[in-house]
Image 1 (cartoon, one colour):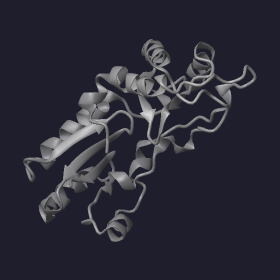
Image 2 (cartoon, rainbow, N blue to C red):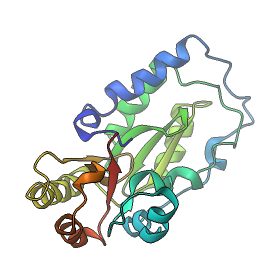
Image 3 (cartoon, rainbow, N blue to C red):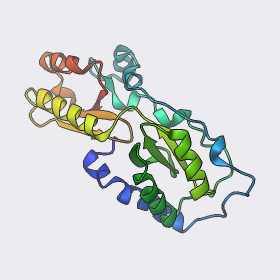
Image 4 (cartoon, helix red, strand yellow):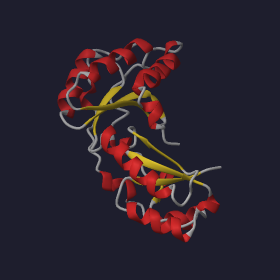
Length: 220
């Protein structure tokens, strides 16, 4: 499930502290001085990657209605290319490190957002639109042994918000109660739909966004 942007705007005050609270009870020793997180791989994500999976394949394998946009949960996690094995970091990020990393990242000129890595909640991702290597070097120095990785992204909160508003205006003329939200962690705008919402008119409407970072989510 995409993290709603209304939650992410609290950016990470809630997110990172949640990670920290998980780690407070189980915090382990930090890595030996010889380990350096500079070994961690870099990643640059482009918006076109979001909709790279063929929609017909998605529909046929999941028995979902065919759409001109991809289903959100079928898209790859763009942080998969980051090196989460790397050095032997402490198992959890504690609340202090989380809060300090957020405060530090907010001062970085290319800052985009901070979020926990999906399925690796003890890792903290700092999304930036440039200067990733520079920030990673600074993070390694400021937070030795902490699982904080910089990641290049090609989106920003403003562009996602504008796209989300455009999608909502179009989709809600067909499905008035459809929910449209966006996430800085994925760079995606998600349209939540029920199976019976999918009509020829909706398919035509969604076709306007087939080349954008928009995906569909089936409500339960």
